[in-house]
Image (cartoon, rainbow, N blue to C red; front, side, top):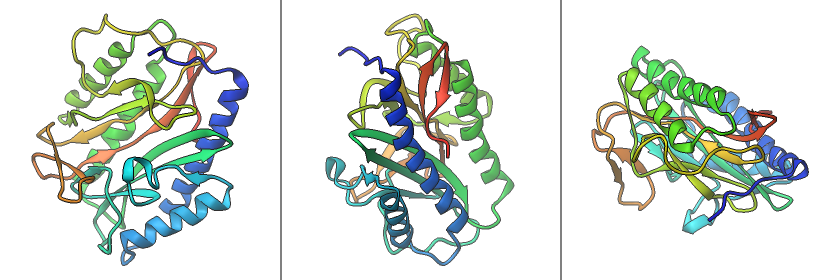
Length: 251
């Protein structure tokens, strides 16, 4: 399947959908306190997103039950909100999708709940820095596999490993579209499609400590690393414009 090239007007609509997500993430990051439940956090996120005129695109997507993925501590992605109470020292991944005027937005953060350990700070920082590095490296003519190779090497150099079997993705009039952008290389960097101006996609480093293999919990959604240790995940939606990647998921 061909990777869509978006016109400026489409990119602007994708930016508006992305901004609704980023403002909601910012609101939650400023509001979440120890003692809240994951279901309360989900409800706050959904209400704030809807107040901006956007629909929560994750709710019902492939059967997912909630508006916000709340991935606590060992859960790296797709955490289902429950009555679990967040506590001082936890780290919480928040992943939100939006639909606005027919276009989709998608971004994620991993945030501290109160004061956290230096080890958890370093883990989260790796996901932030890997994302920043990848965005700065993007340029037309680069192959997506070159980008995945850069992500993998960066994560390994920090002493961590990337989660396997899950990936970043294209986005537009569908929440998930071509291409698939894992954080690890399959094949060689000189294979596959090239990045072009007008492409819009999500980059999302998923950082594990020792084991790359995923384990899905009994709820059928929440994904952990096989090592059972804490994890981190960050995501931005970007458009390639005038030879560089522009972040669409910023307030």
